[in-house]
Structures are given as C-alpha cells and as structure tokens.
Image (cartoon, rainbow, N blue to C red; front, side, top):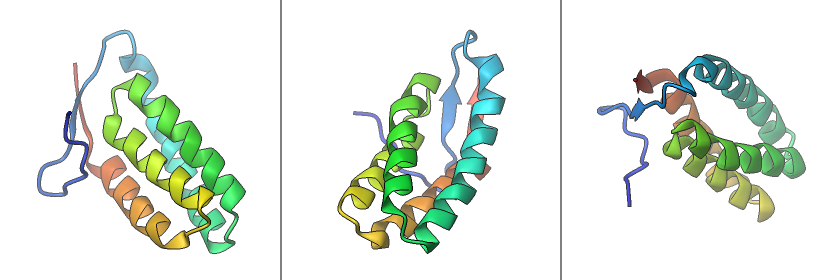
Length: 106
C-alpha cells in the first residue's frame, strides 16, 4: 500500500494522467475553498457539512491521483460521523499542508 501520510519535509509528488492534468488546477482551488468551509463548519460543530465535504473529498481525490487528500477526506468523514471534532482539526491542518506543498508532475 502506498504511503499517503502528509510530510512537510517531503511533499507529495503526484504523477498526473495527462487527460486529468487540465482539470487539476480547478480541483485544487475548489479544495482550497472547501478548506475554508470545513473550518467554518468545525467552528460551528456542523458535523453534517463536515461529513458531506469529507465524503466528497474521499471519493474524488483518488480519481485525480491524490490519495493523501482522499485519506484526509476519509478522516474528516469518519470523525464527523462520530461527532468527534478533535481529529478533524488535525485533518484540516494536514489538508492545508498538502494543498500548499503538493507537486504535480506529468
């Protein structure tokens, strides 16, 4: 199994399918917007929104060749389902770091 841990010392390098490459900038911008929505939902303890956004990211990120983002989405979804805000903050920190450091290669 491929390691999907977010590591600031070794940014994740995503080898992108050329067919998907044109879609990736918009996808990543939308995840940046989701990060803001997730932060707001966490502040308001809106676990329904957290679960939905985490679920969507869990499902879509893998299709874009971004398994660490999919794993983060899963952590958000699972914690929101359990209504446990604690792990969500750490997942959002990892998401922010991932979005800032991911490297895309053809």
